[in-house]
Image: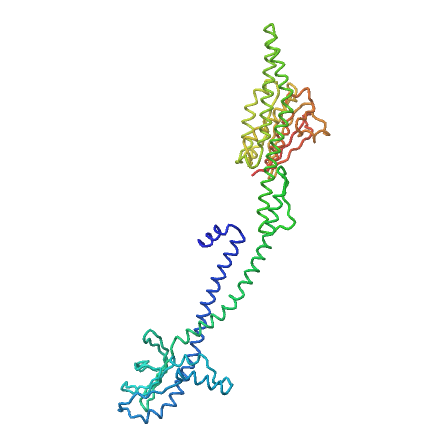
Length: 483
C-alpha cells in the first residue's frame, strides 16, 4: 500500500499512476506465476525422476548381479570403476556428427549431466565393490531400501537403494537434485518468457485503453474550461461513465447551490432597493416635518409617524434577510412539538390581539398535542407569527381568529382562519407572490408575509393551501410531514 501511495504522489497523474501500478502488479504476478510454476513443476519432475531412478536401479541391479558374484572381494584393486560418457568425448561426438551429417551424435548439453548420475555397489561389510566414475567413495545410503536424500559437499543427492539377499550386496543409484532444480527453473522460465516478450505490446495497449477510459474526464475538463465566467448552468455530458457520474453530480449540485445563493443575494439586493425607496422617503418626510414643526402637537404627530415608518423599515429588512437565509444547507433541523410551539407564540401575541378586541382560539385534540415534526424552530416561529399577524391585520375588531392543529395519517395540518372580508378565490394563486397585497391601503406590511410562509413550508417539504373559511374570511392550511 505504501508503494502504491508513493507511486500516486510521484506520478502526478491518473494515467501515470494506473500504468505504474498495473506494471508493478504485472511484475508481481509474473513473479508469483514463476514461483508457483517452479514449485509445481518440481513436484511433477520429482515424481517422474523418482520413477525413472527406481527403474534405472532395477536395470543395473539385474545387469550387475552376475558381475558382483565373480568379484574377488578381498582384492586390493577394488572398487571397480565403470566409466560413462567422458566430458572430452564431446569433441569426438561433434566430429562423428560432421562425418555422418546426422543428429544421433549431436553435441548437446546432455554430456553435462553425466557427473550428476552415479551408482555404487557395497557388500555387507560396507566395502565398495563397484562404482560409476561420477560417484564418490562415501555410501549414498545406510543399508535402507527405497528412497532417501543425502547431502555431500553442499550438493543434495536423491538415492534409491536395493539389496540382493542371495549375493549379499547393496546397490545405490543416486541422482543430483540440481538436475531437477535446473529443469524446473527452465520450464518455469519458458512459461514466463512469452509474457515478458508480449509485455511491451500489452503496456502500449494498456496506455491506449486508459487514455480511452479517461476521455470522458478530459471532456468534462474541456466543458468546464469552455464555460463563461458567470455561467452557472449545470454540466451535461452525452456519455457519462458510472464512475464519473458521482463527480459530475457533485459538481452540478455545487453549481446549483451557488446559483441559488447568488439568486437569493440578487433578489435580496433588488427587493431591498425596490421596497426601501418608499418607506425611507416617508421616514425622511416625517423627520423633516418634526424638524420644521413650530408647536409640540405637530412635532409629536410627526415623531409618532416617524416611529411607525422606522418600525416598518425594520420589519421589512427582517423579512428580507430571513427570506435570503432560507436554505436547507444552512439551517439545522430538530424534532419539535408543534402544539407547544404554537402555545408559546399565541401567549406572546395575545396582548396585541386582545388590544384589538379580537378573539383567538387554539384548537387541538388531546391525542394530537404530541405531534412532532422535524424542522427549524426559528423558521416555524416566523411562520406562525406571520399567519397570526395577517389574520389579525385583516380581521375587524371583535372578530375571531381560530388556530387548529390535527394529525392526518403522516401529515400535520395547521389551519389559521379569520372572520375578515376574505379574498377572491381567483386571487389565491397570487397570494405568495413577492410584494403582492390585495388590500394595498389596509395592509401595513410589504407583501412578503405569505411569500415568507410559503418558503418556510417548502423548506419543511410541506404544502400551502388557501380556501374560504366558515367564519367568512380566509383559511390558510399548512401541511407538513410529521413523525
